[in-house]
Length: 450
Image (cartoon, rainbow, N blue to C red; front, side, top):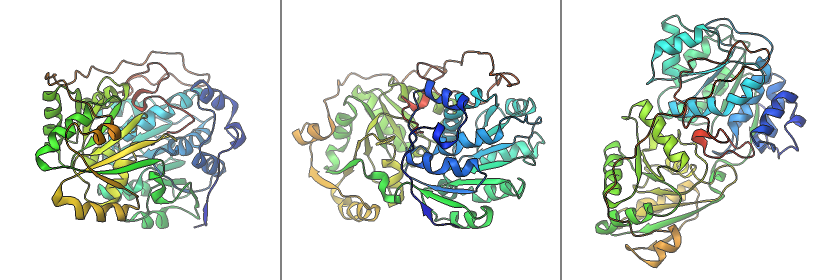
């Protein structure tokens, strides 16, 4: 493995070697300035090198691997059920985000893009594959099912990306990932993106990447560099009221709770206090999760309460406050949660509610996470709480659970020259449809930070 390489942003995507049609498509999406990870990785991927990418969340890694993958796939149609490009993602939400981020770029090059995840009808996904897919974005479990049913083959995959490999390890998916990689040609190009190399990710790199070049935009702890961190010391008796006041603020607010039951309880408490709040965890149906996330991204539901497992699937711009209602159990979880704010060069605030019996463990946690925190005592209605978070007294008028309508279906458009039809029957519920800039579950998209 070669030594890590750090690169600054290039002047243009054209300067990185991307073709004019693709650059024009990016320009239409107001994506004009490459992020460092993109400037570093794209040229090497275009030349066929295996790449290990390491960078904080929001650093633009989806375009870093996705754009050069599309370029390498253009010009040669894929056979039915035999994609030539593969992206493996740990969660359904992340897979949908990747598909959405690459959608316009794929169309500009006449390529067919599809997503296969659990929680949605497998028959429709198999039918989509049968019509031919150039780049498939999939979760390991669903792709395994499709292969076992004979609906998909990886025998012609030219380039594979494993995204968020560390999260794959945390969820216990690495054995499935290695089985899938074994089904791809041994001489194929492989790309791996991960925040850390622990949990077996280092073995994955060693066994499946050939002399990879490593691109890192920042140290692992740098994902918190543009955030302010605060510990809010609260009495147990005051905690529920403090949470309600914080959630009543203006702006997108993301609250993390340890358990699925806790997520539902906190969301119910907030709605009873008059706060429009959604709930996101693994027991929700996939369609509910997709619509809830889209409503949060659009601002229709300004508050989202979620579990740690859902954290990696939340890629929404404009979240300026993350609240640890329950302190995380590990430093890595703290960083994953915190990484939902300060994305794409923005700034953000992270606050952790700490009761008296939690002070010692949270102090040790933040030290392990490598963050500098300031602590202060707060009570409901205190000036310090208002100044830090924008907390307000909730209305007290109960509101119903958010109505999360079905996503607006994408408009049918003529395919780009060379495309064999606009991907009919796309298998992933499109988070937020194709409104405005096409941001969908990303909120607004700027400067390629996806």
